[in-house]
Amino acid sequence: MAQQSPENSPSGKKVALGISGGIAAFKAAEVLRGLQRAGCIVRVAMTKRACEFIQPLTFRALSGAHVIVDDYAPDNPDPIAHITFSQTVDLFIIAPATANIIAKFANGVADDFLTSTYLASTSPVLIAPAMNTLMWHHPATQRNLRQLQSDGVHVIEPDEGEMACGTIGPGRLSEPKNIVAAALDILAHAEENTSRDLAGEHVLMTVGATREAIDPVRFLSNNSSGRMGFAIAEAAQKRGARVTVIAGATTVTAPDSISVIRAYSAEEMHAAVMKELSASSVFIGAAAVTDYRPIAPSLRKIKKTQSLLAIQLEKTPDILQDVAHAKQNQLLIIGFAAETENILANAREKLRDKELDAIVANDVTRAGVGFDTVTNEVTIISRDRKAPIHVPLMRKTNVANIILDEVVRLRARVKPAAVIQPPIRRPRKA
Ligand code: PMT
Image (cartoon, rainbow, N blue to C red; front, side, top):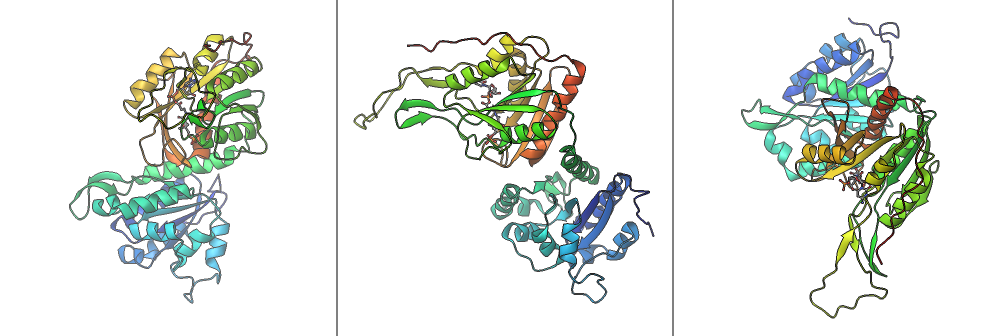
């Protein structure tokens, strides 16, 4: 029987692996082995249905520990196993996660060991769904997945291919090596919070949505909540950076530890950024800046007298572009691209035109991605890298750390701190 100990588990991270009842249950053995090879200590729990596909003995042999199926069973050594199990791990993985277990998690049903453990869990949770394609596409499953994502659960999407039942489409359990990689990524970034690799940097950021007045009660804006930007700000600060945020409208509260300067419009955000820029060494434009504004906002509320109303718009100042134009020395400039089509091509164009060091592209048409979600899926394109980095759907707090990893890498290539020219003033048209 394979014994695990801190000696043969260098990182010593504790992972709970939950297995629910699907044909892919046998692949959980490969996930377990991959995690062990990476130095994790793995405990296994199975649903009763999972035991019909593969015996608990297999996992007991591989993990060297009792496999919990039923915490009421007389052979269970721990009478409150779901509490001890959930409170003592660094990560809880469910692979495969059936439509049934996803539905139970999403609705807080706790009718067996695995579901009770999920409810009592305080660690990050990663689920790897596997099911028939029709079940995967069913609105109920998709609704439950969205619920779990908004509850902060990491989801690794199933692969496409031929299913055991003969249908072809998405639903196959993601490759065990991908599940292991996603798990290690979550564990690494949970740990990174203690790393100080951004010490000495002053990160200036834009966050949230700007608003452009149409009249005293109406405005043009967008759905940016501020989550993505604040997640980066908080992570950067934990990693040792001094952080200044220029925030437009946000629906989430700024972290207490972050210094926030509020700006209403693109013009105000532009002015605040230019004022702070000379003291900064990294600029990150996460805000959704309204691109157009009414040329002449009405000073009084516009009455509903006309059936059609035409409002003439003009471009707002491009903050990111002006930051790039004002750049001196080694200021690192990271932009975002919120796209709905030709994601990578459009993002590359912005990277080139705005002379950025890197751009973070998100396809905001996808569920759980972009505006007002707790998760994001992005592609980071850096000026000096041939291949972009694809960051699968995960919590924005984790995406933030991966973006900051890239900032650290870019900084290592060019060291001296930034010195910036005085701010550019861009007068608003009368
Ligand atoms: O706040 P959340 O709800 O968490 O949502 C996150 C997000 C979707 C807002 C974020 O991930 C994101 O994509 N932010 C950029 C949104 C955007 O405006 O993208 P864009 O492709 O239109 O702009 C490209 C870049 O230019 C961005 O860095 C933007 O900040 C910047 N820009 C755009 C216009 C302008 N006038 N000034 C700018 O600085």
